[in-house]
Image 1 (spheres, helix red, strand yellow):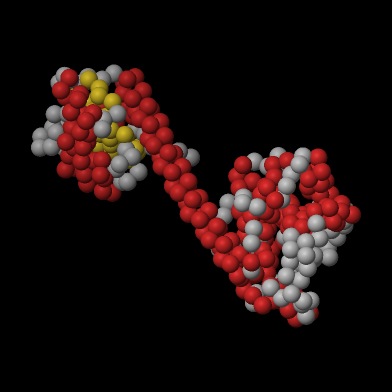
Image 2: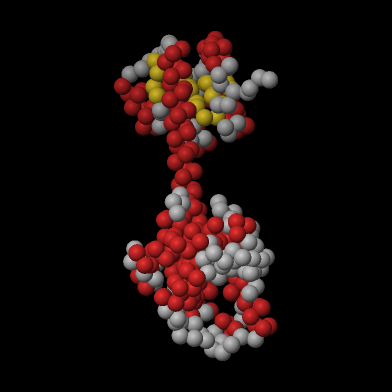
Length: 337
């Protein structure tokens, strides 16, 4: 099976013999397009947006090579432009660089080796520009996504003042645990984001339930228990790089299967959800709630320690305990995280 050339190259030259020569030399390595003048070249460009390198002769009837390459900037902004000329002088070189954004200026006749080397260098330049553009778009998308996450988190905290800061502290502790476990940066970012959103489903819980000072009725408690499912449902169609919705769905699952909503056990629970489970309980027990005063960090850590083989992942629990007892980690320091 013959592999089709990957890279599309356009040659523009009013000398048909030169075009035929380029095609014979390069057609096995590249997908070659050729045009005898700028008008023909524009038609080819309209139908082939994947052209990566444009090589034009300087002297052509009608539009010359410099003007032609200048006009292609709007049509194929990322394409690399190379000018071939038998009339190389300083002014031509300056015009080519300043007006046409020329990558290389080559004298005719140009050796096959030099032409090949220039095309390969042009393709590397094209890929560099494309990668930079993709990275910029990715960063911009991440900024927008971070803004949405912050907005959703603020929305929930506005409805439930007792959870103000809770999601931020849980996110910070979860990220720190993930760091201790050797997570890569993108995984840490996803874990932090999930921490910021883990209680998102509570936006559908009546505020009276969340802020009720007394004991909840079984019916009220069952509604609050739906918040992992609701949060996962809200985020299930968002194209995260990590399973954020599934992690949120599982953050109240327990190692012995006594959690909710699915009663998952052990390794059936995503590791990120097991981390959030520990971070969530530590902060919740250490914080004031509508129905009680804070129980204190020592009691929270004691709960983690006594339940590390039944309720909580033992490795995650040990790392969490070490952070507070040996590495001076503080929830209060993370209040403004």
